[in-house]
Amino acid sequence: MEKSDFSLTLLSNQSPEEVFKAITDVRTWWSGFYSEKFEGNSKNLHDEFSFRTGDGIHYSKHKLIEVIPNKKVVWLVTDSKLDFLEHKTEWTGTKVVFEISIKGDETQLIFTHKGLSPESECYGACAPAWTQYLEQKLRPMINS
Image (tube, rainbow, N blue to C red; front, side, top):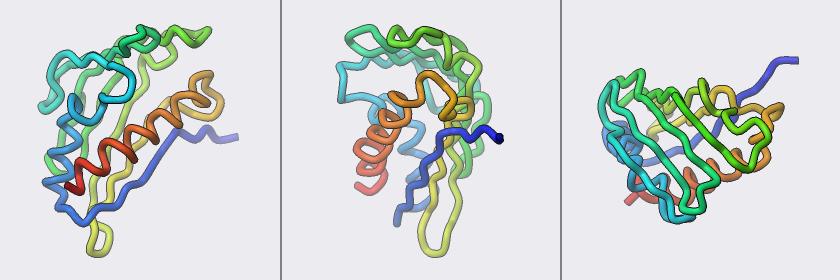
């Protein structure tokens, strides 16, 4: 059976440049629900940042390993501690990928967390959390 990674597609009337700008402003969109703390930078190749929830149940550190302006951003999760899991470092070594393209007269953003599949312990909690951040924080930011 082929493993499928969590993926979500968003469409926008904004340009690829505007979508890219929003994606790389991680501090703004990956916050606001659970007293999160963001440290570091998230705009350029080799930038590193960490994300931590206020209650301490989620910590992850990310490095930008691929940045193609207005087309693609890839984060490598270099460290993680998800206290609500038995395998607390499950995210370590996974990749978070944002792919931007033109689809008809809209800009398409495909978000994929490579390594977060239905077989993952975190999937039941992490897939809905990613959906919430992408739909309720990133999408409005892109479309504003």
